Length: 92
Image (cartoon, rainbow, N blue to C red; front, side, top):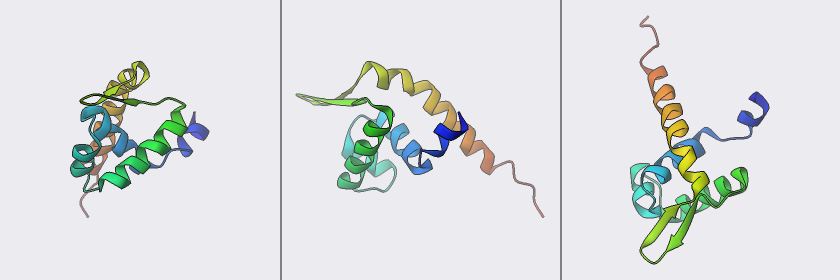
């Protein structure tokens, strides 16, 4: 598990979270202050990592694949847990 985790860039987890919550490259990018091309590049890397399209284009934007849907909750929980670490540091 730890070996697999080392393969993932933490910034990609944030991009994945934004894309799973907002399946629109432009709006997901805006959430992270990333351009649409940068978000597109992140999606390409995520697709390669997971071996799944994650988001597929339809007539009115993108929809999550079934696998993408299964990632929503664990990714949200991981991002929330990581965000919680920021508040756990002791004051000196």
